[in-house]
Image 1: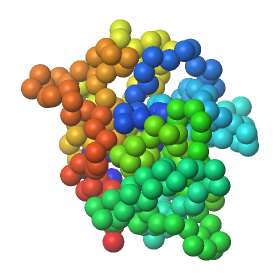
Image 2 (image 1 turned 180 degrees about the vertical axis):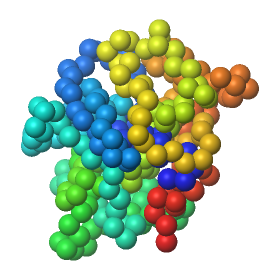
Image 3 (image 1 turned 180 degrees about the horizontal axis):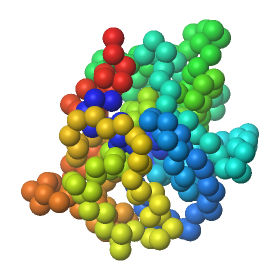
Amino acid sequence: MRVASSLIALSVILAACSPSPTPDARTTPEKAPATLIMPDGTEQQVMGFKQDGYLMLEDDIILADLSSARLGKQGTYVVDTRYRWTGRTIPYTFAANVPQAIRDRVAAAASTIRSTTNVVVTPRTSSTQRNYVEITYNTGTSCASSLGMVGGKQTITLADRCTTGTIIHEFGHAMGLFHEQTRPDRDKHVQIVWANIPADWQSQYQIRSGSAGYGAYDFDSIMHYPAFFDGKIAIQPLDPSIDLNRMGQRNGFSTTDKSTINAMYPR
């Protein structure tokens, strides 16, 4: 939203995630401030951008639904990332307009999560399941999720381009996983090539201090950004032997992802 590497991968969330959630060439985004309450209870001020009706962070973390969200006392949106799903279960429903192809991908992602972690992603069957995810469809490019359990109904929004692996990534955010490359110790493992990231997008590569890290830095995490931004290297491993293609994979949870999730949601 872990004992391995991806919670701090805040590896908050959190692209329009296509197979890779890193932004490609983009126009200048319209921005708005928000406050994250981090897993350790500290607050971090962030700058979100508006896309497909939501205020987003790091290209695929939903900070607020702009049609209904209210501003906090300081005039910013407040997002509390500390909450976990009761009983290790994430119920979900579909908005009426979600195409069958996306429904099938969600079902496949849910099955993979159930079979590889302690978390049960399953269709909502009762109104007594008050905390749940609504899967919505957007005609833009967003594949995005709220971070952690928000309380009540929260959203994962998906476009046609969102693959099964990307949907697994979004459910990772719903569990409370951050993007891997935002963990506090990331500068010991990678260098952010700021010169190759447009100024308007550099805030999306900030470290999320206050997030909880588990295990060693994980280049193979499904919560890691790809190495490239708009065709240019943006995340350079300090170890030159690291294959750049390891970063940004959307095939499934890494071994460390699984142990992290299971530590967050023990049986």
